[in-house]
Image 1 (tube, one colour):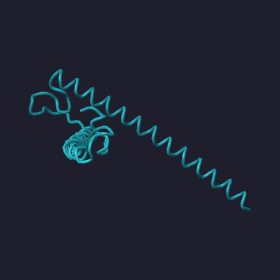
Image 2 (cartoon, rainbow, N blue to C red):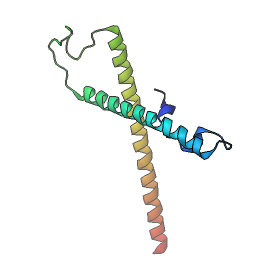
Image 3 (cartoon, helix red, strand yellow):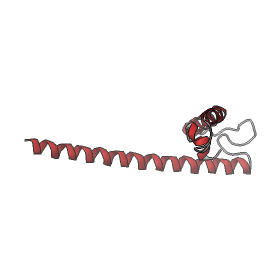
Image 4 (cartoon, rainbow, N blue to C red):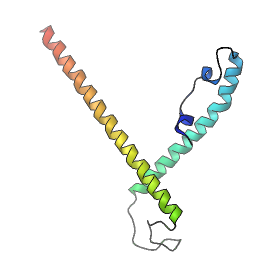
Length: 120
């Protein structure tokens, strides 16, 4: 799934200025449920990744004959590394957003304090 496939598009985005409104609406009604379905699947997978990451690892053998919590094949190893990189990137993005929000809140508070001092 490509990230741009998950972004909302208004009906007007499904044509140009010459496309009739009813055609735009039909296209929107056709593609929006697909987008919602992909978005739901991505959210479900993301939640599953978070749950898997939070589970404690066990030192016994799993059903596939490997150590529990350990990948049983090269493909699974690659997928696990990709998932870990994705999660790490998401964590970094979240930290950056939190920092930006904190800075914005601090700037607003400083602005409010300055305004309050001017009123006094």
